[in-house]
Image 1 (cartoon, one colour):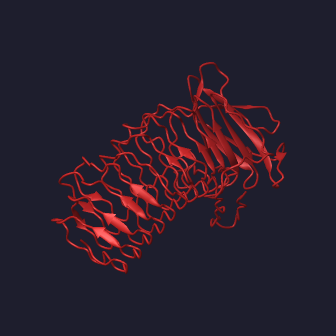
Image 2 (cartoon, one colour):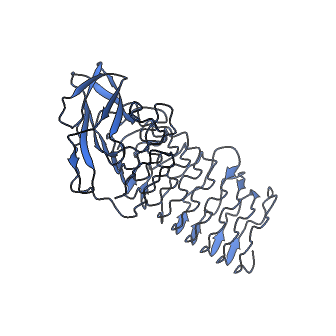
Image 3 (cartoon, helix red, strand yellow):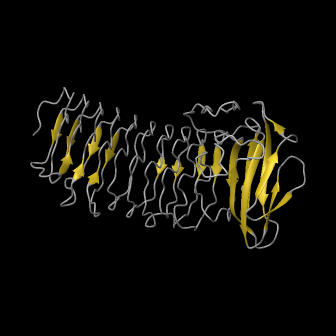
Length: 404
């Protein structure tokens, strides 16, 4: 299990090495529980022995923290920051660090936690980007009603800077959240060591998933997004799962009728072999959607009826997918649509044939099949009136004999 020991003389902090297998909770970790209207953290001193927690409530004025070190629980006013430097009372791990179970909760009847977030303890150590000792986070039902925007994101957030949770391995969010807006943007961005996430079952009003899991290199357990979050998504999935190199299974909502951007959504999902994407009729940008998915083997467009107005960018959509060998496109595309196909299949060394829809029109096909060494057959439309260039479209396609 990788951890980060900071070099306090430099901001050049290392990332943990991604682990490719499923996650098993270490046997000697302190048990934390899933309790309604309570947030529990498992914290350790492998990095910095300090923590700071922002807290807000509704229906009252106070929230409480039991730091798990034997001291009495402490009361805080809503909107304030609780700070702690651990010096004693920890439970030792066989891996050489000490652990504390931290409980954040309310006492007064009718008071609920609306926002609970770990930030840098600037009174103790102010290095932007310093890694935290957070190992686990469990948000009970009824908490975090404001949503999860940048909840565990790295140190690019506005001050007080959020620490980089390099050592965080498990997060469970509340089962439902009715907050509206971009509540999942950047939620787990740059959580390099995160292995398992339990998402809400219900989040119907979320509008987009921008960079939600980006750079979660070690995320390996199957991931299921809220299945009732469908028509409200009018923004993008751009870079949502980018650089999730270990993930093998992603379940998206069953329909995405209003999503507008899928650019780089799965870029560098190196362990992903297949995925099912629902129809996205209002999306115009698919650039790099599956680029650098080195183990992606096939993809089937069940439908590609785009109703949105404008050029449809499918450039680099499967670029540098060396295991990609099969693509099924629909027999026809939406009437009157044009595409940017630059680099669409570039460096797909296993792809052997492609049949395009008979009515497809493209503005560019530059480098569309460049370095497709196994490509033997391509069937293009009879005419593409908008096409301006096919420069290097079939460069290094040594098995390609003819184009009907």
